[in-house]
Figure 1 (cartoon, rainbow, N blue to C red):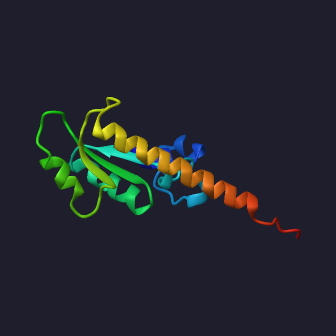
Figure 2 (cartoon, helix red, strand yellow):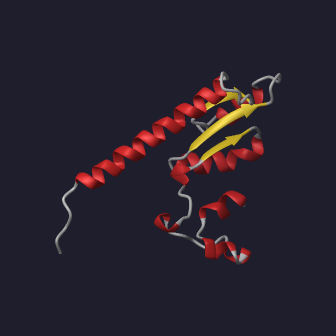
Length: 125
């Protein structure tokens, strides 16, 4: 529910009964394609699936020191973009490096898209 609320315009957040109303993609406060969801269990699967289907990123993690079985359960069905990783966010961890790589790729893509809009001739109508 919180994920859906975050993607809706501010006025919808003021009335919780409107949270299920349809909202056009260009009217969302935070588009799904700009979201990165980090999940560690089966209850995260619906959110990760929705975000990934809408061009966001899903990262599977499991507690440090535990087996990766939960992470692999998350990965089944193509729900994850990357992972599973140990939930270790230190600078030298694989999880941190993967997250940083996703962020760098997204910034590059966004910058390229913006540059492309600037280079297109403007309509004079």
